[in-house]
Image (cartoon, rainbow, N blue to C red; front, side):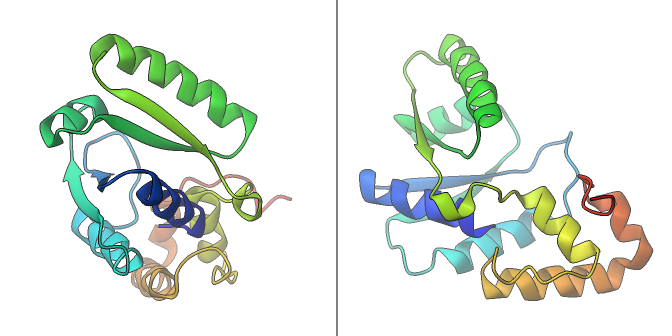
Length: 164
């Protein structure tokens, strides 16, 4: 969990009586941590927020929302390309689940450049990620990358920081 994701979650928790953070456990993405590890890290990050719970899911997000009785899905927006992607996903999800609304929160300005892929790449290349993630995530990243060694590159979607 990045500080940007945490910011969106805490702000959304102020808007809703209860917020459920869904941690995706399905195929199709490279994950550096197991779903159980990711849930644990999110729970640590939001421990001080009594109206937030964390679950995993491996289905369509709208199906997860339906199963939990959610009335809305909250998404964070950082840049214009996020808007285009989220807009398309919201319209498709609206077709699948017209009873569920979508709420997009703009990230706080200090997190606009932040993504989990960039944070993982910085950590993989030995950089300091402490300004971007909670302290327990810094430790978890360091430990995981130490155990993976060179195989860590296969678990991280590399953006282009090596070349820039």
